[in-house]
Length: 158
Image (cartoon, rainbow, N blue to C red; front, side):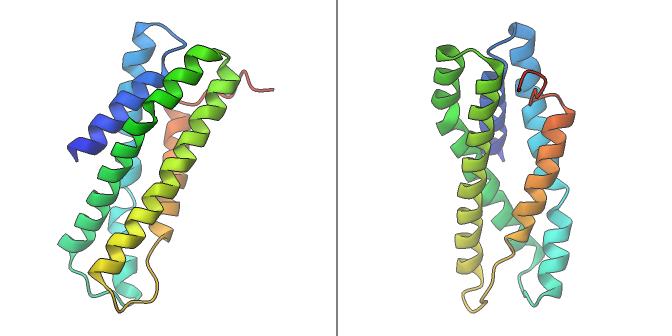
């Protein structure tokens, strides 16, 4: 959990580079809160719907798979800090920085889907499908929260 918090907080801080110091702190906290809520809200649905679809994993193993996935997501966010920092400084146009951030979040999402699938296949090797729909729900909730918390600014895109 610490990796996920550190990753979202530090990456979120780079999202505020075009503003003042208050923006850096605000975006770091907002990114962490939005990501935490996005990862936590669909967690009960993951266990319930996964069980209804034939999974025999206990709640603790399902939670562990989600925790490993979010930890790797946090690491991917940390790895993306130089990308966002470089492009925010090199091309300080809010529309371009928005495009960079959306690209980074999409890449992190793809990486999380891969990690989650690998973990679930190890936990249930006989099962043919993995519940990647959970990460799609997470992405939808996360997108709404990131927009609601003001992390993505679409006003200057045009």
